[in-house]
Amino acid sequence: MKDNNLSKKIFIQSIILTILLTAVIASMITIILMNNSNKLSAITNKLSAIQQIIDKDYLGDIDENKVLDETVKGYVAGLGDEYSEYFTKEELDEYKTNNIEGQYVGVGLYIVQDTQKNAIRVLAPIKGSPAEAAGIISGDYIVKIDDQSFTGDQITEASNKMKGQEGTKVKIQVLRGNETKDFEVERKNVRVNPIESDIYENNIGYIKISTFDEGCSKEFKEKLDDLKSKNIQSLIIDLRNNGGGIVDEATAIADLFTDKDSTLLITKDKSGNEDITYAENDKDIDVPIIVLTNENTASASEILAGALKDNNVAKIVGTTTFGKGVIQELLTMNDGSGLKLTTNEYYTPNRNKINKVGIEPDEKVELPDEYKNVLAVPKEQDTQLNKAIDLLKK
Image 1 (cartoon, one colour):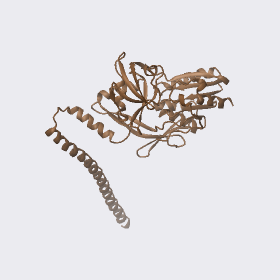
Image 2 (cartoon, helix red, strand yellow):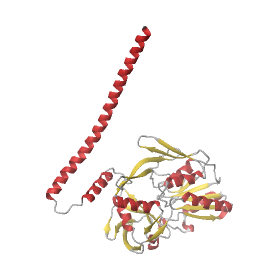
Image 3 (cartoon, rainbow, N blue to C red):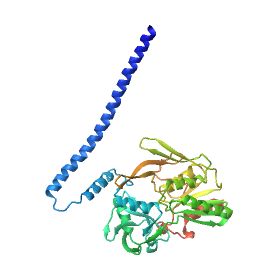
């Protein structure tokens, strides 16, 4: 009899506990929904008030679709994140074509938003591009395009403005130091060729990566195999002026130089959840390695430099990298529009922060002042490259 009473008591307590938990969860969900509802109501009320004033007093015509797009753009811009942005359907289609396929019709510039100056800075012209031929160099600030002024938060619009039909020309005004320079550049089909290789004295191999486009790691492996067949004894990987690209391409290259199961990259999301990328293969080559970096080495380039440095397979020579340590996801909405949103931050294998910090070199070496903003530095004047060569000779 006692056992039956005890069982009933436990059963009743379980029911009461379940009811209490359900009530707590329901209350939490209600609070969350109310908070979201309050936020939406505040936005709706504000827009409704503005719309009433516009409908009553605005003199011009109203393009409702444009108003909606600009409203959403403003909401995303209000995040204050220079890498997050909203695309209309047309803008998203163009973005995918020009940023994923690795070629486009334009002038051939890597550009970045300088948030301190709210300006558009040239990371580097693509080698062999119309922009390089015209004389635009790293460090230039784009002021106007076809007589239209642009600020840093208009980087997407500026990028699109420089693209267009092959054979047409675009006027680009830049600020170089205190001097304004004007260029007229003919748009061409620009194909990014990210990999260059060479061999220096003492069987020192050299590979330069300009960007991490799709297929970059495969091409890198081909160049590396070619250098191995020529019996290189050490290697220089040049990541200067490399603005980044596809993260998986960078980690695939890091995999060639690290032991199997080595940590290559740590990413964290908003909730603190971690995703760790490990090396999947044994080392492809085991020789002394130096990575060249500068202030334009950014994003995926910093991932590769950090992975090799923290796994003690490479030394860094040059200057501190750019410091872009966040990852964006490209989301497509039901109506074809899109949202590029910063969702993860990445860290080096030793959990060193990259964003807004950059990667410090083991050997800090500056280029001569007259070559700091020059893409192709003559070898005899390239103090960073020559320092790497000297270190590998020892």
